[in-house]
Image (cartoon, rainbow, N blue to C red; front, side, top):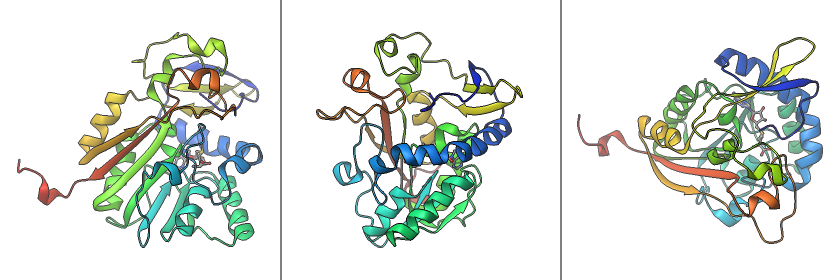
Length: 279
Ligand SMILES: C[S@@+](CC[C@H](N)C(=O)[O-])C[C@H]1O[C@@H](n2cnc3c(N)ncnc32)[C@H](O)[C@@H]1O
């Protein structure tokens, strides 16, 4: 599932703890951040909002709605491109990311663009904000698929949102987990069970230490997770591969993208407890 080759390691599907996931992914993103920004920065745009490797932008999809005057948190904000877009559209965008190096890139882009995104280093499972602080929380391929304790992460989003607030996030489309992570023809044949939630793990050959982890949830898992935290799912956007788009990003390509969805964008609203039936 990784969008770059493991540096010097092997790939496995095996269980990992929350601590192992976090301990692996922070340093992995620190190591990878320079290459990530050099490779994808122009595609993302310094103050652009791209929802996934298909290249659909928030200007096109309008998933968040009008952000003017709203408090907006991006979880797994990387270099803050999306939150910078929020700022240029009248919202108060804030970033949070696990990776120190990604946040250094965010500061660099703040200076280069003159659009500053106040950002904090932290993890999605322990958001350092008071309850009811935001109108919108979103992730564009941000933290969610890197987090083992997803129930806790979604609970944290529900806590920091105001009633009626919106939660929108893009992740690798759950159906992609059936296929080898290959942008070419081999990536079109299902080789593993859709229902196998065993995490994708990279292990460093030299140290034997877990160096990268991604977690799979099925479509039903996401629906149940949202419902359990008082969210009402209002849309599931499955962006189609655009006609003139030929960019390969990891396992995302025209070859696969015209046949199977690569990205899922969930859109949910936090229900006001006063509107819920008693009991
Ligand atoms: C694929 S990048 C996406 C960043 C940005 N949205 C973009 O489009 O470039 C995923 C980001 O999630 C961050 N991340 C991974 N695990 C996280 C966690 N547990 N809490 C917060 N951020 C996390 C990584 O450091 C990385 O910057």
